[in-house]
Image: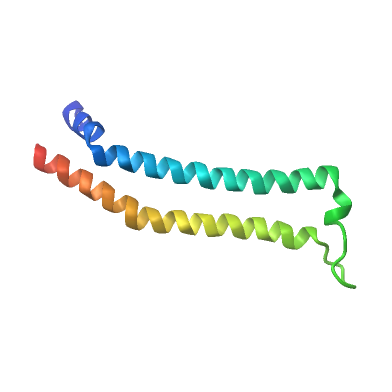
Length: 104
């Protein structure tokens, strides 16, 4: 990519909008995962008996569904990000490409 095209892309207001939206979403999702994961780890470290309690009369403890929930949270957030990337972000990228293409 030559410097002129790079400059046009960087100066495009849609590019700034794309970067702001994508970064904001990534930071929010990162914070959610960080809080969920480290809360789980801190619970294991400082109150292992909480997660070690058996559910009913079986051998499954509270920690297993909590751990699975964190994994499912990651999968759900990834799906939301992919859906937004394929619709909203890709549309902005196409608009930016069209703007730069018409300017050159």
